[in-house]
Image: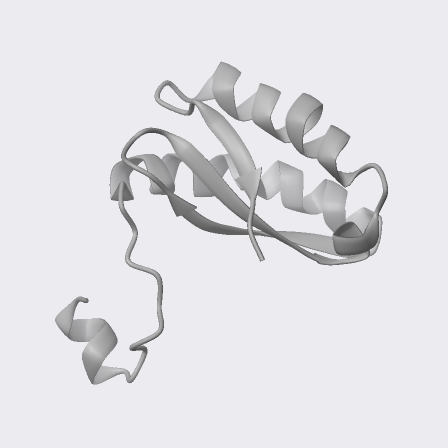
Length: 94
């Protein structure tokens, strides 16, 4: 855990595995987040692993949407893989 997180008392914060890829994905997630917001939900970027696995957390309406897995696989993952070299897969986490 980084010194900054310890000083801020964020001991439960996730340690980002691949910061450079995380930053690239986070920039691209702005358009995805606008889409989710327009449907009453949100999508949080949780982590990006060293192997290129992007971990997202669905919130609000997205969490219970029956189409969320399709949206993640055929929408979000497809866009991220096309635009950001290194992204291999996108998964949701609780």
